[in-house]
Length: 390
Ligand code: PMP
Image (cartoon, rainbow, N blue to C red):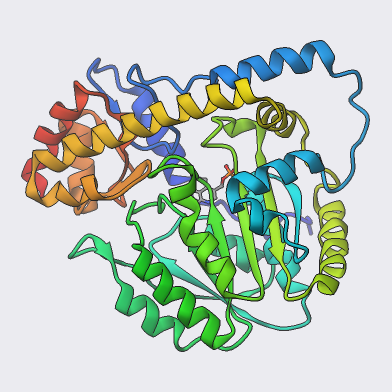
């Protein structure tokens, strides 16, 4: 019989289906709040100015496409570590990092590293979460346990549920946390909540894996990393999966990094060897172009300034749309308090279908919206359309 006879059709990706329906809709006022990319006031996802400038420099001055190595562009990873972790943690002799194909590659590499540890830890993931989280860890053969993270009735973080679940975790278990701009809820942890989590994680000997995919799109570059840094300072071992795909708008270039904080300096090299070996087996080497762009920007003060300015404009636009939604209806007030691209509307899938049919508003059945899919005009139309369903 055929090698492939056992394969069955899979349901199409829910978001891609939404994109397809939106594209086919002829109504001129149609709104797409489905896809998870930043959009400007005109609905475009442009190449950032600093990225264009860096690409011009690379085109002119890059004189080889020769192989680097499984670690990718190490200078990129080291410069990025300072931005993400801050100088002190970045320069620690307990830290090592490698370039990865996007945040997804970083998460998968972290999962593979965990799977090779010789232990059999459970991976704890709060829900709802990015739909790819659970499958990534399952695909590496790890056991996953989901627990409450968000209280839909209060539209806020369910800290009690979260702490109660994690107090059942065993020493060595992995705790996956969104560093900022939680996907899909936008719900932010307060400094007190980060401290409570850090205390519990440290006391029980758990290992945090922070997924930082939106640094700079919430409150600011340092503010968005503060919780993660606090956590890293509180524990011996930790992992950080990073994506530059949103904050540098490099999505399809697949730019990420994975950092491991080891318990002692002497534990670092065996971890690094394992990372490089696993990377070689999976993708051999990460794609270079996007990381070369980020390195070129971070090496140059002018390009860095240009990037920071544009990033802060993006952040301000997201905050303004959030504020408009928050003012539109008391049930949406939480959106103004939350951060990042995403918010979860308290509506069911019948309401989602009805918004699509009657108002040409497109979102996945979960009711997750990308607030950057709105602009200063459409946000009013959107709020009026959604109101009856709240
Ligand atoms: N983590 C989260 C929470 C995300 O939302 C995403 C992207 N949607 C990723 C990781 C992966 O990012 P990348 O595109 O860089 O693989």
